[in-house]
Image (tube, rainbow, N blue to C red; front, side):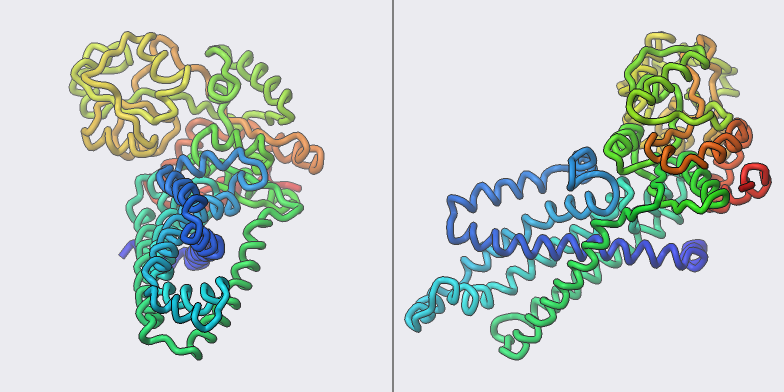
Length: 516
């Protein structure tokens, strides 16, 4: 079975993904419990203060997870990319169930138990610690159970900001339309959620008031303290995950970008003694740009046309040399350096199905425009918003569709086109799925799309710290042709080979890149 083989062949990587996933959930849930129970107590004893707190937690719960992660990226101290921002987001999602069940548990305490405690001369804190919280603990644990299960699921999304975990397999599988890789991350994540739910449900029953014993309570208190100390240690490691002396290399969330990120990483590791930290599948252009400006990302590959229009908001220019000059100047103004182009031009292409193009005799976008009123279109969300994207394309070719274009993940548009859910999409000229799925790139006969040469972009302070990198990237410049990039993408997307192995074989074929 391919899925079992995948897990066996990626044993070390798979174990690391599980452990990182567990760490994210354990640390965030532990902190949420440490904060949520006291906040729940405050909410119970002082409803005027508690109502706004619960209301705020409610608001946090309604924010979509991707939006939450995106919101946290530019935030100072608590934001950025990686596990730190992911833990913050997971804490915010876990607070509400813990707070709510703490309040409901305290409200359910039998009034006669409180009266007995007061009659014995207990203070308010003694009553809370010795009577109310012990009697409310099963309700509180129910909230912990909900928070944990929600955390396991939400932690998969955290891979979009480089936090790692099982979500990496899901994102990589979506990018390459590989169901085996998607299941490789989804099945363990679902299993972890189920195991957490069953374990905590069992613990709820064991800690029910009618079964509780003082000895068990003391053991539980000691275990909780030990777990808390362990969480603090793990949390400290996650919070300071970016250690000194490393270059953080990132990528966007599609196959070619992961290959290019791996190419930069392996080239540096082969040619220098510099340590590298990989942060791949980070999302779209603006996620990488924001992370780089915040100093959480040191190096990644951008495309000149994308930088010109999407990052620096300049008008579309068709001349490659002028685009390169302007983008280079704009990066310098922000303290970054645009390194020499890698050699290929991954411009946008408009795609239809191969059988449809052959049946209608289509070769150009202008010819396809005649049939567009009867077609459905689907585009990546970034393409719909960009100046050099959908709006300009419609004006340039007079395109009209049967209905408003569908907005979807860029990687999914290829499969949607092949399965006849849409009839026209935008894609990347070097994408390996074009050949695999028999898609047809229509000629841009009105030369609408600007050049998109792939260029590494690095923070200036990193280049100053490691000047030997200039020679490394000079040797890498111009070595990847359009055909070579398409070949590597095909190997990753169609043949389901690891990006790291694809890159290793490319570098082995070009030993001149790796000399020290």
